[in-house]
Length: 575
Image (cartoon, rainbow, N blue to C red):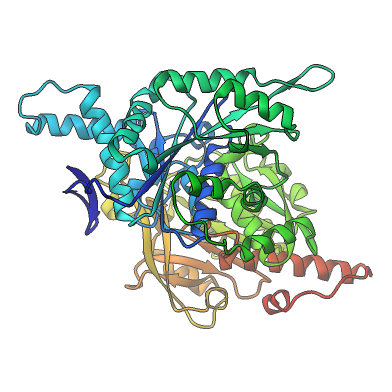
């Protein structure tokens, strides 16, 4: 028996028959962590979907957390929220952006979730007195969840990425489970892709295959032989090098794919296609190899190679050690790129530390737009408020996301509405004007994981507003992840002072979007639009922000007497 999702709940269903048509591709990594398994997985999904195949895609994380919701984004990267409210690993964001397909709770599996499920079933007596062991009970639970995700998506091909590095003790139950899958499903229905590193050393940059040899040997010791190797490298692999890897790793030379470093990850689908990655997978799985429809990705690649415009976007947050940890705001950063692509532009991110309140105005002087992203905790809040004040007073295009909306409301309440000392009860429970407050239904919750307002909620968009202009719709669905809201008791006071609440919950109780009328582009959302943006289909708020930033850049150039190229119709429409 295994579990499938029905009616919003996970229920037991029958195991697929032995003649199931789903094929399974497992992606593992070796040598070092963060080697690019997630991007390789996303690219394969993209290329198979471009051929008309139905896919499912899944990330297995070998940590004991039940989900990623309580993990520090500075340690692990952002928490990605799916449409139905699952708090997941950031790789699911890559998956959604590349394959343009909404994922759900079954798309992310953790050791914590697997063990919790097995222990709960043991407590109920489901095992009828048997001794509960890693094999078969844990491995069966893993296989059941893999099959359930494939079934939920009616997948022709299920692609599963195993987190961590081969040899990690935490991954052993998962690698044993995927080893068993080949016996369960049949040789022609299961294959393995292994991503490794080809380092180079010495003054002559000599490339070394030994780490790859050891990584494949470690995999084979577990009982898994890779069908395809993706070799991460900074330089092309010679035929001699491929033949050497093939000989020592017992793999055909044409099954070795170069994972050359790319200037941008959105160039990789077409790069992998040119190397025949998907075609080799389909051949191994005995599936038809139809011509792929990649015109959208080819357009993205062309724009990345020769953008017509360039601008600088400030990102003001508190997780600013980004030389080492760029994943903290990864969906925001990628959404900026999507908005730039939609405007045939490239965007440079300027990281601004919100804890340095005094230097923020100077930092923003050379920027064309500002984003204040979401986050938790008081650190850096006053700096974000100062950045928003600067944007409001100086006509700098501004987009606030979740906490970005809340800090924008605080700034407006203090400096325009005259509510001295206005704040959020998250940061100052004794504030005289709690313009941001916790939802009533959240006040009695004492657990952190999965207890916020999560997933997609409807938002009614007010007519004749910037929000309506951006969306072109009166009712939208956007993803949330928060506990605090604009306090309904202050809606009328803020609106009387000129703040426009341009998006609300359908019952008008909750503020979902705010904006300013007499400003080139000033808008903020309680939700997280970055979770729904795609490189081939940018989110309208990011498209609009970039267009407004380019228009500001053009206007400044004209005022300074510099010649500029004709701006697009979209840029004019923001005026």
